[in-house]
Amino acid sequence: MTGNIFDLQHFCTGDGPGIRTTVFLKGCSLHCPWCHNPESQSFKPEILLNTMRCIGCGACDGVCPAGDARGTLASASARTSVCGSCDACANVCPSGCLEVAGRRLAVEEVMREVLQDEAYYRHSGGGMTLSGGEPMAQPAFSRVLLEAAKAAGLHTAVETSGDGRTEDFLATAPFTDLWLWDIKMVDAALYRELTGGDLHRMLANLEAVAAAGATIRFRVLYIPEFHDRDGIAEATAALLSRYPQFEREVIPYHLLGNAKRDKLGLPQLRFREPTTEETSQFTRLVS
Ligand code: SF4
Ligand code: SF4
Ligand code: SF4
Image (cartoon, rainbow, N blue to C red; front, side, top):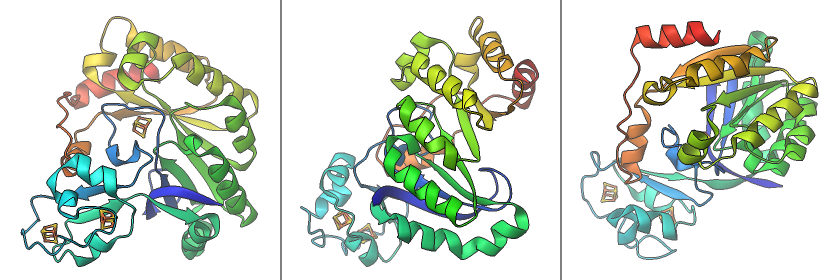
């Protein structure tokens, strides 16, 4: 079985306990405007072009077997419409300014790479984390990969928006030691407007996974211009108070995703980053 992967990072320390390898799955059912991995949203391969490093040598012209190679540089839409993930353009680029996001890898290939760091997992209590994109947007691949990791004795974690089919969450739960569960926005209309998702579906999945005895760590997004609106911070605290057994951490919005948006030809984001004091206040409220 193969899955659509856009990155695989070793020695991660923020995606669960210990030292971990995080596997980033491409494709997401939501389209959060604050997404710091915008190349993860589409299921199609995409080319990220660092225009600041491009020296205009033309080496990538004509190499693309999927279409007009000039299109790989000309516009974001051309870059995303033709790519078949062959790596030819990235391989000829002398300045390393082209990256290909999205390729199909077999469970065995991913496990071979993940198991390279087995000794580090053993000594640190780490393991493998699935992130994205949305792992539950590729439920069969995620489940089989997690099952393989558990069979190899690894600790497993899944970072999720909570969007997907309840049966897929429940089928994955037996192979998931920790869910890193994003809480983005608790107002249903605003959630729909901003992410395209259904808040009630996310909440139903959360309830089902919690009832199945899972361990969850909440990751609570904080963007002042949304979360400081009347009653939203309080509603976030009320939701979390229904699950006192689970840990939570506040993730203050940051602008780091703009570098990738630039490489994809997307407009820059303009949300304001919270101050340390604002983040502390929000954290106190939801803790
Ligand atoms: S990775 Fe291959 S298919 Fe994709 S744009 Fe580059 S040359 Fe074309
Ligand atoms: S090969 Fe790289 S440096 Fe040369 S034109 Fe293409 S993107 Fe720019
Ligand atoms: S759920 Fe996560 S990966 Fe999907 S769009 Fe939102 S922030 Fe990006």
